[in-house]
Image (cartoon, rainbow, N blue to C red; front, side, top):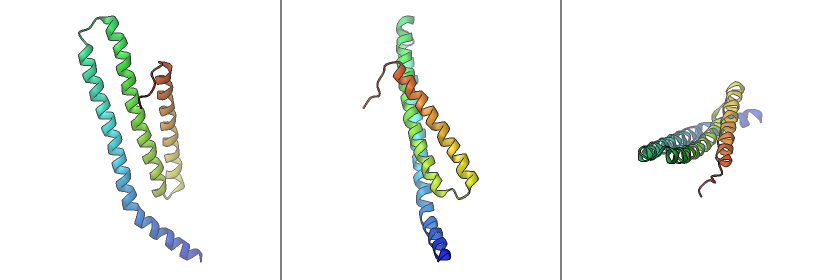
Length: 126
């Protein structure tokens, strides 16, 4: 009976492996696109305010920085999802432990970015 379960598990893993790999790749690409777009928009916004007075620049730079942080936070959420999906494909306990540490670090980074956004009193846009 145990041999049959192992065989069924291997069949399921072989069936899901290509689909999960493609899904993880798509999620990673989406996270990169979100970060890229956020960085480009932040840079364009910065170029627009560069000729303003220093006091106006400081206020608007903070707003630009927080918008960039929100984009990074959104991308981190994608990456955490991709890491969770990777656990389905990871067979060894060592790889699983490494992956769990990476997910924990990303969650802490995500939490700290959200606290930074809250600290400045700017709510996430719906």
